Amino acid sequence: MSAATAPWPGDPHDENDFPAGTSATAEDDEELHLRLKQAVETTDAPDAVFAVSRHGRRTVHHGGSAPPPPTPRENLRYELGSASKTFTGLLLAQLIRCGLLTGGERATACLDPDRRTEAAAPVTLAHLLTHTSGLPALPADFHLRALPAWHTAPYARYPAARVIDAFLRRGPRHRPGTRWRYSNFGVAVLGHALAAVTGTPWENLLTDQILRPLALDGTALRASGPDTDAVGHGKDGRTPVPGFDAGGFQAAGALRATPHDLLTFLEAHLDPAGTPLSGALRSVRTPLLRRGLGHRHVHTMAWFRHPTDVGPMYFHGGATLGQQAFLGFRPDTGTALAAVCTRRFRSGDPFVATAYGLLAEG
Image (cartoon, rainbow, N blue to C red; front, side):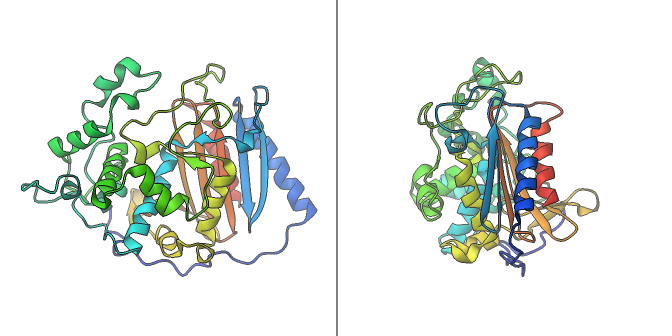
């Protein structure tokens, strides 16, 4: 991992937030409809929704191999898995912009203020969010505890208290800030640290700071029922699986959202000035670190960032036991993409490749 490209939390880019473009033509609309229809068919899932916003103009196509559910697919809430981390990143950015935190706070001190000893190189909130904490992907005993419910609810067997205890007992494997390693464990700890330091339960904190200000009424951390939430399926695309229970990993992957809410969330990133979270939304677009050969992999507080011929694209994917999601946006073209499906792919994933390709094409 290289040094960060900007001081934490970073100054926003001088990019156009929502560049002006020519009005869409009927031919443009028809072409986009056809591309989204093909994307749904390529996904081959019981339910799939591909939703695109271009300069605020939305196009949504949905379908699937299963009979249409009673509630239209575009109005159901879908499990986001790790794409939930983009909301967690924005939350930390907002708490920093409000002056409540700096990002440099020690996670141990947030979770246990009476703790008097700590490693010479402490894990900070910034380390946890950017996957540079030195923590493994999951706690050392996670698989052992999750095994009895591996195909139904593995995370549910690892509650919040155990996540916190695993962090306080073992700490990082590597010196914080020296290596990038994707860690659900780290972001889960971040969620508990933010809740502890603000004295606010995680669900309330996210709702008050992010969901309510952005009017995301179709986004929640808990399942409500079959008329509200999409039903996931396994690798075969036919076997239903239980709704995802994130256990103590809420900040890393618990959110559910409708496709239209996801577009609202992404449109806010494209047009920060039109929202009450403008400063935080600008912050999460700022590159913080680069890694890999030639420093090709760029990360912000909340997003993976890849180049295109005319500007960067920001994206994040996620998966649960039976659903997948892909979110992304491109400031250069004013394009946002939200794609969800009710099937878990484990190899040769056509869903992610199709969604990424649509965003890359602009």
